[in-house]
View 1 (cartoon, rainbow, N blue to C red):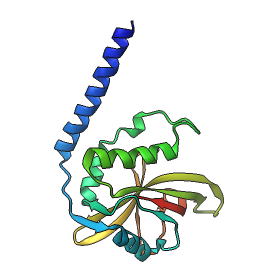
View 2 (cartoon, rainbow, N blue to C red; view 1 turned 90 degrees about the vertical axis):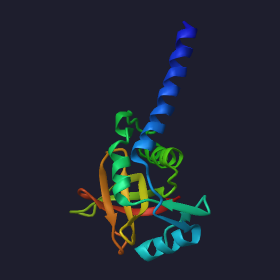
View 3 (spheres, rainbow, N blue to C red; view 1 turned 90 degrees about the horizontal axis):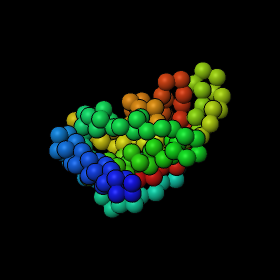
Length: 178
């Protein structure tokens, strides 16, 4: 019985790895801009996040265009995984999404953003959450978007005022990690 389990584990890993290679080749992300760690800090400051604690693990960040990110998100299978509070919840999904896209596509321009969530209509605190923050290009401009892999396909462009609104919520950032 152990031999069969080992065989399944091996084939499962091979399928995952080869599937990622096929997906990367099909999407074929092109690097549209490279920015330094100081450049990332400057862009975040310009977008209204200068006072938010920022950790940067890399010296350079490789950006692609937003259309490519939308395609990557379209085929992101995170929503097929089970959400379990305190085990596989928002922080795990956001960390996985950022790490996977760096490893599979070579794009380290998706980080995580920790936030407090408030209801837009009554400003009532809902809870704490983690999602992804993506820096990308759109034409000749640099843009930031928030992507929430726990609910899939939920995105919000971050305007220069630093506001993040998704559905009936607004996100108040407390930390950003790239």
